[in-house]
Image 1 (cartoon, rainbow, N blue to C red):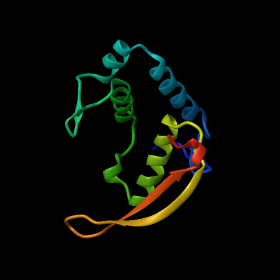
Image 2: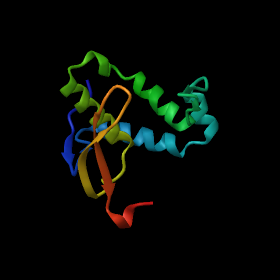
Image 3: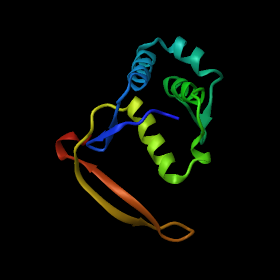
Image 4: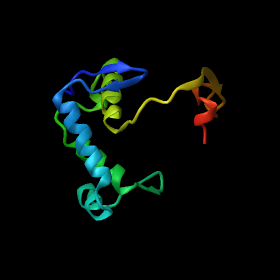
Length: 125
């Protein structure tokens, strides 16, 4: 099970040596040549018909090797906490939000709840 993290500004911050080590490994992976990333990632993968970037594939492979249960085996609250902790490993600084609001999206199966996040105007691309 991942170590606990403290949440600051919506982003989980590392609290232990293993959290810091994971961030360092991911940062080193990101700076590695593409050939090294491909070697770590294993065979090329596609998701929904789109080739997975070697850096992302390598990171996912490393996370799959971690001990502990997978998301589908956890209660929703623990799965969310684990996802937040793992996302913090890849994340950078928080992005201030200009607007956060609940919306409804029409789908063939009926309306679906969603949340709209809009960054501060000077941070939008």
